[in-house]
Length: 68
Image (cartoon, rainbow, N blue to C red; front, top):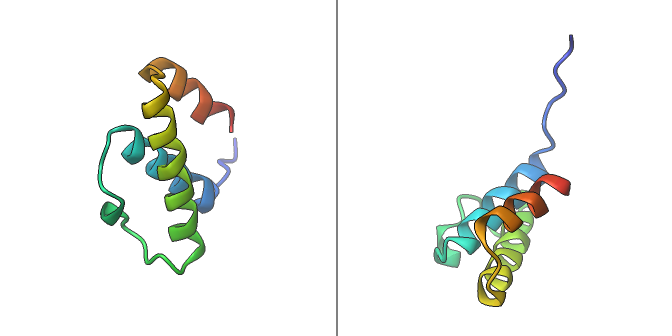
C-alpha cells in the first residue's frame, strides 16, 4: 500500500493550532513568517487561540483539526 505524503501546509496549520490552543507565544513559530508554512502556522495559531478563549475542550479541538 502506498503512503501518501502529508501536506506540509496542513501539518504547519495543525502544529500552529495546537500551539495556540496550548497558549504558547506566537514567537514559538518554527518557520519564517514570510514562508507559506509560516503563514499557515500563524493561521492555525490564531484559530487555536480563539478556540481556547471560547472555552472549547481538548476533544472538540482534536475533532476540528482532524476534519480539516
